[in-house]
Length: 362
Image 1: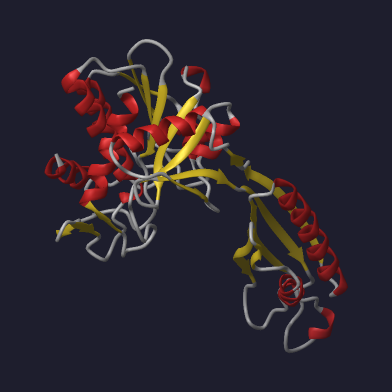
Image 2: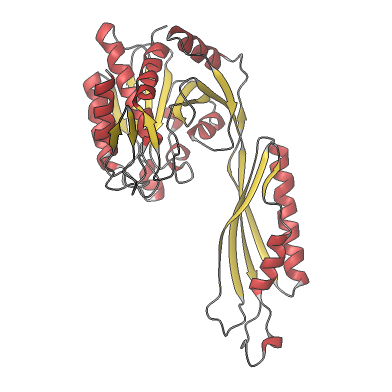
């Protein structure tokens, strides 16, 4: 089974599927789900944000289903992936990501379904392979939740080893500021100008960065402005984010950031327009909740202990939970994701597939 898992993993990561361009991979996994015996459709999520494919939804069985979820897209550089298998480890060749995030989840779900089907009819299950998860969770954000019956979801998209259960995720607020100064010739009459760059520098220097406390992070990640060295810059835009496992802390810091950026830029002669937006809401699932107890029991059946963690990252789980589906994220064993050093042990692919099988056989 491990050899078959590795072969299918290599097959799927070798298909180009960066965010927004998942059509070829989506068509292939739809056929694979049909071959297993699921009824399959694709929604129109892609048309909402300019992608070339929607979310893939598969259904089987009678009764109250659970959702098995993974995402089809990958971050850049994710084209022309050539996996290298050595000593039981699958690695990127070094010039692209490996896309174990999240093909490891896709392969595990497919393999687990096949193993169940060998011995019994498929139980009630809904499979959701989302698109453009890596770009602000676009696929799950535009998913038509009226198409789903389940109120319980398992999202195979965690970076920890199999057995890792993520029960808490932060709220994220993004902010964008446009700071306007006044242009002037930098060598003839600089005194007539108001440098937006200088005003922004003072403002950003007053913002807390990185870990603000043990459950909150902030960052400014994008900054653009200026046209030439001989012009006092009159326009700068910058973007950042605030994340916290405590929702009230996010709101508090967002208000603080707006105040600091506005007051500091005005103190240096410029004006700022600052916009904030909740990108996704956080969640915390009680360890005694049915969705957690089911996975703990499934892990026990295959001899893997459960480890509970919180994460500072967002996932489809944030959107599912916000739409009334109790969801947790599960580790698939991939490591160094979002880098050209990404890798995954083949043994972790096997463990994930066995976990899917165990989840479905209750």
